[in-house]
Image (tube, rainbow, N blue to C red; front, side, top):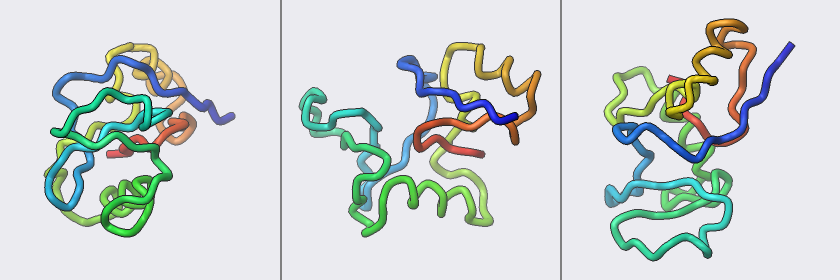
Length: 107
């Protein structure tokens, strides 16, 4: 059995972000054009092209595969959201059986 969870609106405030090549945090949203104007960050969909030339999803996968620490402070998908239902799913079904439906970190 594989359980797919959907992104929740309330992420932990100290969760890290992917960043652009100039260091702006990237916030994933369904419709970047409708996001509030904020020059301090970038709004994108996971499959939008990053400024590094690959999709943000691919950038995240490459980040997770890199043999180093976690300098961006990304959380595992099940810890990213404040709702504890994600942690309870992992406790009951193990991480390999629960997938996040968006570009979540797997660290």
